[in-house]
Length: 517
Image 1 (cartoon, helix red, strand yellow):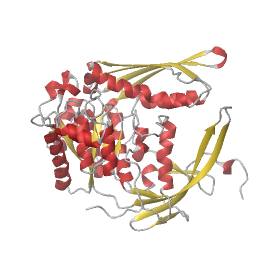
Image 2: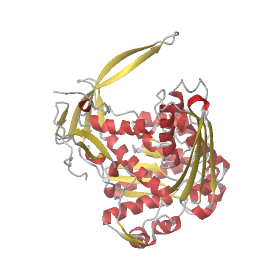
Image 3: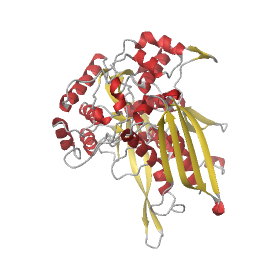
Image 4: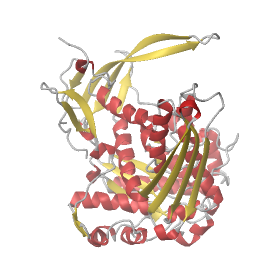
């Protein structure tokens, strides 16, 4: 059963918010601008307003997280962190005693500005205190993997965490065994064959779809869960073909699964199963899981989907740095990004078809920022952008990322920035998995309407609010893709503000710049 509604530590005293035992009701006036650019180049702006009402369910449900690729580095690291935090497990390192934390998670370890106290001090509170959110310690974790190793053995294989922590986690994790996973070898690198000893039998994709649905139902029932979130953190697949009659509509997708069409990928089968079970599905890898038929199916059933590809290290920094450069009127001419890593992700990406999926997700990250400044870039002009990934087993999960940014500056000058980033791959990705899960679950409890007598409705099935956490954000058709990191973070923070009746942050701080009575 779900827990009782908690009391949040943020209470807003405003006519724009009303706290009731089951819901928080809030309202806002949303301002938008319609712009007409005339042939002369004149931009005519027409502002308009839309009045929104929001309703947020306060009761926090009991939530299960089912990961595809549970036994991989990310899955075993997330599971370890939840157990260590929940049980208060400390461990010794060569520099002293380390205690568990959720650093790198914006929901657990970042703050949001509320305003000023009476003495002029800015007041910040934890992001998680704005509205009721799931505590990651309470998540029930499970999932699938094509390897049959138990989670304790997976943790040892990953070589991510310190020995003394792993030693203490063994009793908790040695009984955790992944469910058999879907394995279509043509979609991942051939070098993964030796790991595939825990696969669903047969070749019928319809049977596999049904089994995944049964797994979700059983996991939910056996753990007494209110809801389940399904998240892909398995190997990167090659891109699947997309064409009419194969996967362009929900009907063609389901028919192709029934007909065992070869171009239906494992990730699309998992996504279809999750949607049919009413479970949010999150894609943490770069492949095109969300073919048009999957998106249409999610929209039809009113189920959330989100992705693609965790944005954890090099790409997150890139989306921040290019936003700064272009916003400062500096013109990036070339971006060369090199990575090498030695974990199984790197091994899989050593195959050209799988690398191509990753290359696409990494290469598009600067597009919206380039398009935002026509003073720097002519139509169709774009910086040279090269992405290289190499497999070097000796470095393990400690990925090296090296970037060179060459930009044109004042009066024909050139500026070069060179960065070296040692990314602990899974330790950066794991908190993103938690944030994606927690924020997706929150959005399942939020509804809105735009008129006082209108029906309450959910956000669009394509949950683009999670873009901050994804390299290649999936957005509803016909809407812009936002990669700029500060805009993505502001979207999350401002939505949390309006859910409790606060205005979006505009950073004007007029009370500091003029006299207010």
